[in-house]
Length: 111
Image (cartoon, rainbow, N blue to C red; front, top):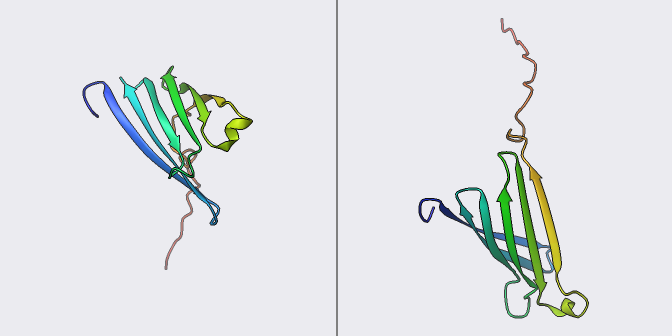
C-alpha cells in the first residue's frame, strides 16, 4: 500500500520452452481496491522486446471483475499485427480452491 486507498502490485512472469525464454513485467495500481490500471512490458532485452500493454479494470462486485487491455506489438510481428484488444470478465466463487464439501470421516479403530 502506497497510501490510503492506493496500492501497487508488481509482477513478473517467466515463460520458457527450454530453448527460448520470455518475461513479462507489469505494474498495476489499485484505487480503493476496486479500480485498477497499469502497464506491462513483454521481453527481456532490446532484441527480445515483443509488446507493451495498457490495462484498465473495475471490480463491479465482490464476485465480478471486468478488465480491458490493449497490447501494442513492438516486435517484427508489427508488420502483420497492429496490436490486440483483450477483454476479461472474472467471476470469483468466494471459496479457495480445494475448499468445499468435506470428505467422509473414516474411523480407524486401533486395538
